[in-house]
Structure formats: C-alpha cells, structure tokens
Amino acid sequence: MFNLILFGPPGSGKGTQSDKLVAKYGLVHLSTGNLLREEIATKTPLGLQAMRFMDKGQLVPDEVVIGMVDSHFDKHKDAKGFLFDGFPRTVAQAKALDKLLELKKTEISKVLLLDVDEEELIKRLILRGKTSGRSDDADENILRSRQDVYKRETLPVAAYYAKAKKVIHIDGIGEIDEIFERLCSHIDKKMK
Ligand code: ADP
Image (tube, rainbow, N blue to C red; front, side):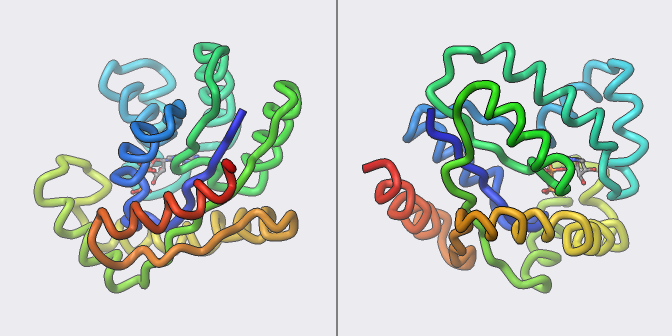
C-alpha cells in the first residue's frame, strides 16, 4: 500500500488538491471533515455530537474521529492506498493511525505539508465562506480560532512525523495546477 497524508492549516487547499491526487494515483480519499459533514447531513448521533464542536471551530474528540476512520478502513479493504486529508489532527490521532496501519502491515509513506501564510489563509476562507455554505467558514472569529487550534493541536503532528523524516514542505501559494505539479513531483519520486 502507498499511504499519504496531505497536511496543512485550514484553507491551505487540502480538499482541492486531494480530489486531483486521488484521481491521478487511484488512492482512497479519507477526509475526516467530509465524513463528519456527511454524518451531520444525515443527522446521525455521531454527526449531531460532532456539529457542536465544528460550529465553534473546535476539534471533534479523538475517540469519535478515530472510530469513524476505523470503520471507513473496513469499507475499503482492497484499497491500494489512502490519502488522508484533515487527519490526523492531533498526536493522539497520529499514534492511533500508526497502530491501524501496522495491523495492515503498512505505514505512512510521506506527509506533504502545504505552506501558506496566515493572512492568505484567512482571505481564502472568507472568500470560501461566501459560497461554501459551511457554518464554520462564515465568521471571522471562528476562522481565526481554527488557525489557533491548528497551531496548538495539529502542528505537533508535523513534528511527530518529522522525527521519522517523513515531512516534505510544499509551497502552497500559486495556481492550483502549479501546486498540484509540485505535489506530484514529490510523490513520483517516492513511488519509483
Ligand atoms: P478545514 O481544514 O478547512 O478546517 P475540514 O473539513 O478538514 O476543514 O474540518 C472541518 C472541521 O471538522 C474542523 O474544524 C473540526 O471541527 C472537524 N474535524 C475534521 N477533521 C477532524 C479531526 N481529524 N479531528 C478532529 N476534528 C476534526
């Protein structure tokens, strides 16, 4: 299996680039944000619980997210690999993911980290909020607190994978296709 993590702050373009990457490399896209929004849309108990955190820009509790990822894994037993997007977002989630992958006798190959400065992120998210219909994109205070949560709880995940020399920084500023090419050139090197 070939497993990648697309990493970066809210608004860095993970969702956009993930769609292109899974189409090109035939990986299964695992976006915890999308999975949680599906749970909310279908009003499951998990979704109703998660919504209370998401609307405030806080993280959904680890055990909820990890359980959801585990059952998504079970649905894709024959996957040739996964692209993780928006997960893991805490060190506890990263450790849980490592264990799940170990059971499958595989591991994370690379963590691709999209670098975008905070003012550009806020600009993009305000723009997205005008059309996305996402309640967590509508309010600038919530956008800012999501950036704070990222720095406080999610950036340590990058340090965790950096210890294993798995992190590659990618410049996340530019045209969508340009950034996609940057990502592909690193992936192609790794897949050879
Ligand atoms: P973005 O990266 O643009 O903030 P996502 O769609 O990845 O968007 O996530 C939206 C929200 O869903 C997060 O702010 C958080 O509340 C929740 N969420 C998504 N993934 C996770 C996760 N792995 N752990 C905890 N909460 C998560």
